[in-house]
Image 1 (tube, helix red, strand yellow):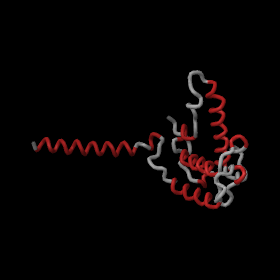
Image 2: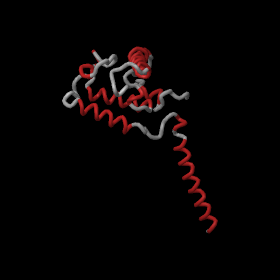
Image 3: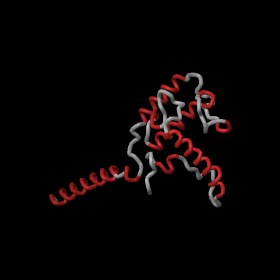
Image 4: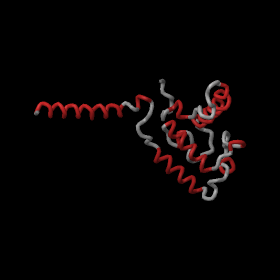
Length: 159
C-alpha cells in the first residue's frame, strides 16, 4: 500500500511538471502566453478616446490626420479605428510607440508605421483579390489578418 501511495505521488508530480513544461513552450509555437503590453496600449487608447469625447463615432479620417488606408469606402468610426490599432499591437506583440511617436501620432517618421500600412494593403489584396479566385472556399469565411502570420510576434515565426 505504501508503494502504491509513493507511485501515485510521483505520477501526480510528473503531471504537474509536464503541464508547466507545456506552458513554457507556448512561446516556441509563436504565441506568447500573455500580451504583456495590453494594459499599456489600453491606457494610451483610453487617453486618446478621452481627448476625443463626442467624436468616437465620427469617421476616423475626419478626426485624425495622415490616415492613408482607412478612408473613402473604409470609413471606420474613431472608436473602431482605435480597436483596430489595439488589435494590430496585440497581433505583433507591441505597444503604440512601436509604430507611432506619441509626440506626433501622425508622423510617418518610423519605418514600422510605413511597413504596417503596406502590410494592411497586402491583407486587403489577399482577402479581396486572391482568396476570391480560389475555388471551393468561401472568401468571406477565409480571411487573413495580422495574427494569421504574426501570432503575437513582430517578425512572423517560421512554422
